[in-house]
Length: 305
Ligand code: ATP
Ligand code: ZN
Ligand code: MG
Image (cartoon, rainbow, N blue to C red):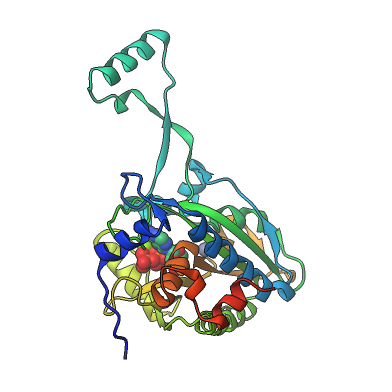
């Protein structure tokens, strides 16, 4: 039986006290101490070691995405409540003086900014889909990315951040290959996380589509088993936290970006993402605030000799 206590404030306080996280005054945007970051990086390295034989191509993108891409993937239709837009000042000298005066007078000044061509990337895989455009090589492709993502969901829960990192794998190819890949990784993810002593379970899930129409989209996503999550109790026993997600997009991205199989048929895409901060917090919750006390079985995997 799980006899641990789950209390959000107590957990956050302990994390700060042990130097694992550093408060910034912003909800969901704390700094990471060296030990927190070491755990995170080592978990990421472990994932990459496990996946090494798959031969994924590693790509790295900046944490901003073209506004046109946000529009094209339908983000403003489905998740406007999570979006983060980058604005800047594009005015005249006179307006710049006005802006500065407003700032110093303690007046609101944001209306003097204009939207730039970029938004903050809300999912690490988005920049990858356009790179698949056209005819795929035989067998499709597999890409991995590590990226910072932004979501406007300020919260006191240490597990719900506004800016966090995802290690994602993105598979594109024939529909049956993509589904088989997703299924195999779901098992692989469970085995990996169980092997690290985490009390995980998997379940079908849905995305937080906005509004009333969104409820139907979410129900449809569950019916079609398009999204799975690996869940682990971190801040609550009753509502375990999603630490890894698996999404089968069918032809959502391939139709938008003109992605075709080597035989010029409809391609499907799927992605999986480990929420690296959440995995780190799950490990801390499971094994304690001092990594020196963690079980040897866990230490040996994260800090291999
Ligand atoms: P949740 O249901 O908890 O909001 P999600 O369904 O929005 O999670 P995804 O969109 O599938 O999550 O994102 C992939 C992974 O990123 C999740 O499995 C999780 O580990 C992590 N993640 C999602 N939202 C956050 C957040 N606000 N803070 C930290 N990690 C997050
Ligand atoms: Zn993804
Ligand atoms: Mg969410």
